[in-house]
Length: 379
Length: 216
Ligand SMILES: Nc1ncnc2c1ncn2[C@@H]1O[C@H](COP(=O)(O)OP(=O)(O)OP(=O)(O)O)[C@@H](O)[C@H]1O
Ligand SMILES: [Mg+2]
Image (tube, rainbow over all chains, first blue to last red):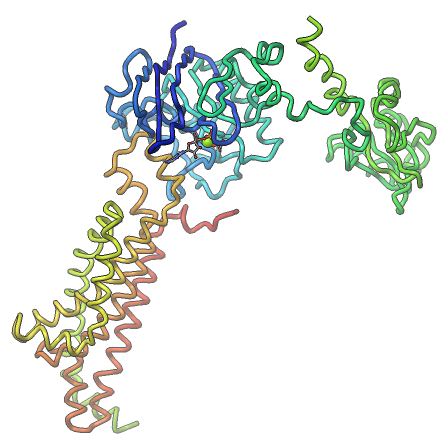
C-alpha cells in the first residue's frame, strides 16, 4: 500500500511565529490516521494544508502522488471529503441537496441519482425516505453530523479529512458515530485523516496515531504501540490523563454509577418490568421515599414471580444482598463486586441511604489500569 | 369630514394621476438604488478596508436635508423627474448597501469554511451560500429604503417631478387642509402597502429550511 499523503519538510509560519516548524509525515492509503495533541499544537493547521485551506510557507505536500500545490485548490478540494466540528450543513438546502452538493459542483448532475443518495444516507444510518427532503434544522446534532459525513463521502473521494467531527456531540452519540466510522471504513477503505484532542477517541478509531506537540510530530504509531511504548513523558501523560490516579487511591465515590435506577417497594411487578425496559437495565434498586436502601430487585426474580398479580416489589426483592459503604477503600470492594450474584453492589452512606452502584463495568477501568501503566516496566 | 370627502371626489382624477406618478418615481428610484447598492455591498465584503469609508460617505449623503439635496440637483441636472429620481436613489443607497454588507458578513463562518472545503469557487459561494443566507437581511434594507423613498418622493414636486407632493404643495399654498390630506394620506397608504407587500414577498421566497427556527 502506498502513501496517500506525504508532507515533505513543510513549514507554516504566521509572521515570526512558526506554527509548524518542519513537518515530515506519511499517511498510508486506506487507513484511519488520527492527529492528536493538545489545543494549539497545530492539528488543524496540518490538516488544512492537505486541502490547501491553508497554504504552507515552504515545503511540499503530495496527495495521491502529485504535488498538491500544482493542482488548483478548487479541483483538489472537490476530490477530498471534508467534515468539520460545526457540521456546516446549508440550512436553506434539503438533506438531499446538501448531500449532492459536491457532485453538483463538479457538474456531474446527470450522474447524481437517487440511488446514490439513498445509499449514502443508509451508509450513515439515516432512513432515506424519512430524511431526504428534510432540512438540517429539523435534525438533531448527531443526525446532522451523519449527513455531514454522507456529504463528504458522496462523490467517493479517496481521502476524507475530519476535524474534530464528533467533539460537539453528547457522549452516547459520539460513541455511536465512532463505531459507525470504523464499520464504514472497513467497507469503503478511504484514507481518513481525523483530528481530535481526545486520546480515548484516537485509541478507539485509529489505525495510526500521530501525536503532535508544538507543531512537531512526537510519535507516529499504532494505538497498541503507543500504549505499550509511549515515546516520552509527554505522550505518556497524554495517554494517561484520565488513567493517572492509581486504583488504590481512588474512592468508591469516584468510580460508582451515580444515579442508579431505583423503584419504590410498593410498586407492582409490571411497572418494574416496564421501567427496566425503558431504562435498559436488568435490575432495580429498591429505596423508600427517604432514599433509604431496602434491597435489590433483579429481573430474574421479578420474572419468576410475574404471574402473581397481587405481589409488589417488596415481596420479590432481596434484602440480604451485599452492600458497601461509600467510605470503603476501593480495593476491598473489588472481590465483593466480582462475587455479587448480579454483578452489582449498592453503595450506601452511614445512614443507610443509597448513594450509588458499583458495577463490574465501572471497575473494568480500574482493573485494567495497572496493565496499561505498568506495561513498560514489566516487560 | 364631508369637506374632505368632497375634495377627494372633486379631485379624484388628480389624485389618481399623482399617485401613479408617485409610484413610478419611487419604483424607478428603488430599481436604481438596488442595482447600485447590492453590488456595492457585495464588493465591500470583498474589500473590507473600503467598507468604513464608503458606507461613511453614503451615510453623509443621507444627512443632507432632502430639500437641500433636491436644490443641489437643479444646477447639475435641471428640473423634472431625472434629478428627483437621482436624489431619491442617493437616499435609498445606504440601507440597502449596509444591509447587503452586514448580511453577508453575518453568514456563519462555519458554512463558508464548509463551502470552501468542498471546493466551491468564490462565485459559487456567493450564489449558493452567501446571497441566499443574507437575502432576508438585504430584503429588510430594501423595505426600509422603500418606505423612505415614498416619503422623499413627496418632496420631488419641488423640482417639478410631480407625484403626490403636488397636491400637498398646492394645499399648503391654498391653506386648504383637505387638499393637503388628499396628497398626504395616499402617500402614507402607499408606504404601508409597499411595506406589507415586500414583507409578504420576503416570507414567500424564504426557503422552507430557513423558516424553521433553530433548535439550539
Ligand atoms: N491565522 C493565524 N494567525 C496566527 N496564528 C495562527 C493562525 N491560525 C492558527 N494560528 C496558531 O497556530 C497554532 C496552531 O493552531 P491550530 O488551529 O492548528 O491548532 P489545533 O491543534 O487545531 O488546536 P485545537 O485543538 O484548539 O483546534 C495555534 O497556536 C494558533 O494560535
Ligand atoms: Mg483545531
